[in-house]
Image 1 (tube, rainbow, N blue to C red):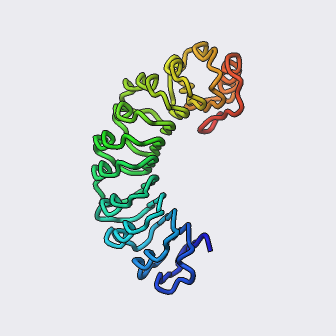
Image 2: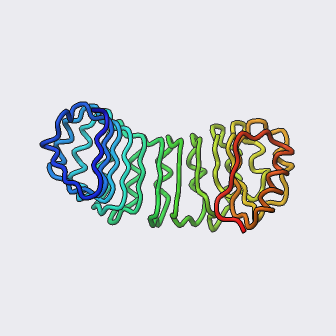
Amino acid sequence: MDSLFYKKEQAIDFAQVVDIESIKELVLHNCTVSNFTCIIDAKALKSIALVNCNITSEDLSCLKKMEKLKTIRLNVMKLDNILCLADIASLRELSIRRIEGINYEELEYFSKLQSLALQETEVSSFVFMKKLKNLKELEFNEVSIGDLNFLYDLPRLKEFTMRYRAEDETALNCISKMKYLQCFQYPVPDMSIYKECSKISSIGVDSARVQSFYELEGKKTITDVMFYNLETEKQYKQQLAEVNKFLDLRSYGYMGKLS
């Protein structure tokens, strides 16, 4: 049994789970859980996703004994802290969505993380990013962002996704120095920002602010474009036609509804 999936209103007693040793993926969605600490017997577990479950930070602390656990996704729960996860030596991917009661500054202790997603939450400061030098993927969704200065602290970043504008975009210029950057899905207003990105293949465009696309000429690495803040289908077709003058696209699209 590679995967174990329990969904809405099911009760699960981990002391009674058969063949728990072979489970590699665990998903608990709106479940009532008992004896969660018995999960330590799932020696092969690589991924766990929890959605609206009655699991506490104390329960989660047992996961530090999991030697193969690489991915944790936490959704719509209340926890005292996330430090209980910082000692999981194998943890590389962490996703947090609508988790109440935690201090996001504790993320500074997750220095081995390679992927971080924060969704539908309030984060007062991003100082913790200075400690996440190994991050390769970063995603924000419905998180209030004052500025993008944290990008200066992420030299290994390959993928960045934030489909709305920050209040202060001054730090956008720093992406030209990110030598590993391949995907930058953000509503960028000035295409010259991508000019020095040698490995960039997937980009975002702020259709409401962009003035020209000629700066993309010669950027053969770019094969994917996403348009943001469009108003009409006519505008979309016009801008796509302009981009196609300079790029050989494999995929393209837009976010939002068009009139």
